[in-house]
Structures are given as C-alpha cells and as structure tokens.
Length: 402
Image 1 (cartoon, rainbow, N blue to C red):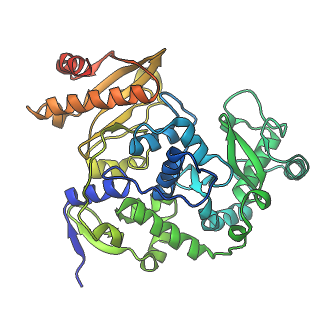
Image 2 (image 1 turned 90 degrees about the horizontal axis):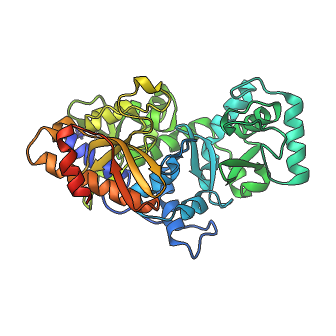
Image 3 (image 1 turned 120 degrees about the vertical axis):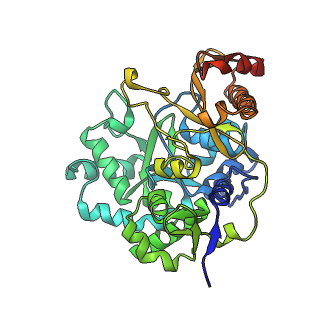
C-alpha cells in the first residue's frame, strides 16, 4: 500500500493538534493526589499528552514549564501547574529532550539512559565516589534533601553548582539511584528512587531496544507527523537508533512535499484535525518550537534563543517568545515586568503578515490578544510596548491594546 501523501499545510495542522494547540488537550488523571484541583489535573494531562516538558532556570513572565501549560490550557493557575508536576507522586525529572519533567509512569522507559550513565561512570564531571556514598547515607538517614541540605550547594544558580556533593547527587540522579519528584522553590529535592518510585515501576526491566521503541513511538504520537531527525531530537536518541526500531513503533510512513522520509502516528491520520487554534505566547523551550530546524520547516520561522547572546548582539531580545495565532507563528515578543505592567521590550510581526494588507491588521489583533491574556494570567493590569517592528504598526497595536 503506498504511503499517505500530505501537504505541508496538512502536516502543520496535524502537528499542532498532536501538540495540544489545535482543539482541547485531553485531561487524563490517574492518581497523583490531585483531586479537588482541576487545573492541576489538566496540567498533568498536558504533560502526559506531550510526554515531556522542558525545564529551564530563566523566569521572565513565568518559568518555561508553566508557560507550556498556559499555552495549551489558558489561564490555569500557576500553583496548579507546580502541584501537578511536583507533588511527589505524579512526575519526576530526568534527561529526555533536555532536562525535563516526565510522567512518573515513564520511569521504566529511561532505563537505557540510566544504564548508559552507569557504564560511563560520570555525568557532566568526574564523580567523587566517597561523596556518592555520603549522599546515599544522608538520604537514607535523613529523608529527602535539597543540595543545600546535602551540603552541596554554593551561592549561584543551582544547576551550575559544582561541589562534590552536588556532582554526586546529579550523577546518582542520572544513574537512577536518586530521583527528583519534588522541588522547593527552584531547588531540587533529592530522594532515594527505592522510596520515591513505585515498586511496580522499578521492577520493570526493559531492554534498551524496548525503551527506545516506546520513546520513539511516544515522540511520533506527540508530534503527529515527523521526520527521522524530528523523532530523534524529541527524546534525544541517535538517528540510527530510530532506524533500528521504527518498524516496531507502529508509526506509518507518509510523504510530505518538500520533506525527507517521514512517519505519522495512525491516530493522527484517523481524522482531519479540527478545533480552535490557540492564540498565545510560547516559551522558547516549548516542544512545538524547541527544534529550530523543525520550526523552520513547519512554520518558515527562524527561532533563536538569545538569552545567552551578548546584549549588543541580540536581534529580537533576551527571552523572545514566538506568538502563535491561527496555526502560524506570526511574530515575537521579548517580555518583561515592572510592577503590574507587562512590558514588551520589543514586539515584531513576521514580514509575511506585516507587509500584506489585511494580514497585518489580523496579526496586530492577535498580538494584542496574546499580550493582554498573558498579562492577566501573571497578574498584570496593563501592557506597554516599547518598540515594534515594523514601526508602522505601533499605532494600530496601541489602539488594539486599548
């Protein structure tokens, strides 16, 4: 049977639907101590729908993991998102696409990566054996602890502390002896996996191929339609690993004009994607856009994070957030906050919209809507735009905001 043929437009809509940005995200709740908090249940449903939500230390409007839930659910309470992810029973942190929060039931799927770290004997740095013993002893005797409680934190960003006990804790997390299922503020709370992960999950013994097969299949479901490189990037495995398991994933080959070989999840092809498009600001670490090459191919949008670029060399801003509307990435906003005012240090509308009569007006209306809704979500009662590109849209945007 010949592969299904899709246009790029069809592939884009399929991916938006699979990513929970076209139509409503399913709200699945299987425990997790979230009864009485519908926002937390929906946020957990979003996590399970996507498979992974990337974490990052930067907080402008909110932290990235909160923005991912907001983009799909609207004004879900930020405390509900925190409760969904870090209540100690529903999710855990580990290395997937990057440092991510993952559904607790996916613990067995990362055994292949834990074994790889064990073989290497290190994570980022040389692992001090004595410090590892001391960390495990402290956790057994004192219960869950932060890096500070373990005596392993220095002043500065927690992910970049490099004392022996912090290095040891991170290595033990990578190998699975230690796990993080809770945070206090932005600090990881380390616990013994034998205490924090349910026995029925710890006792599953999947082979490397079984782990990779399921993760690639999950990536296919989360993307709807994807190339080999897309699938590999979503869960950070090698392309040849995708090749080795693709036939066992249940994904089906499709042809998309202008793409290399691609696969789709059967459910994504079962019906035409329908529903309401989200109009929203996206975290630069959102799974819709975290792969720059995929974002360029899907949306003709050059997505770059400039937070780590010297200020003088930034083009769009420190924490530039793509603006999604009508199923397209129509512009960008570099946000900030001053008291109860949301500030757009720089806003821009993509040339394809800005230079087309009719499209420019719609883009401005969508940009104003995204700014107003984001402001309300984070408790701001005013929006101020300092600069817009092209400048001719300044007056229409001010009028739309007011």
